[in-house]
Length: 119
Image (tube, rainbow, N blue to C red; front, side):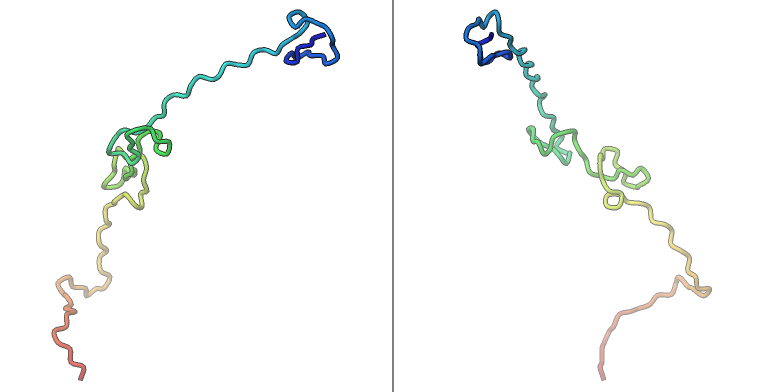
């Protein structure tokens, strides 16, 4: 029997044997995986995640905050993320016509106080 303790067919009861002829060994382990590619980072100074060297928190493609809604007045084709409610501007609707039949655009109201007399 095999008396080599690293062999897969090791026999603790064996008293004689030749490791070269009677022992069976496990297949060699798989080679290690290749090294990971270098980290990607954004090197555009105008980007929100700009970095001068790889930084795990900022890794990946460059990110630009701005208006991503094509219907907005300030649509930014370079923007990669944003909130239409915060970054976008939309045209104002025209003012509604006044509902009163006797409305006069020329009338103004002066709310200033020149003098106050409590008596």
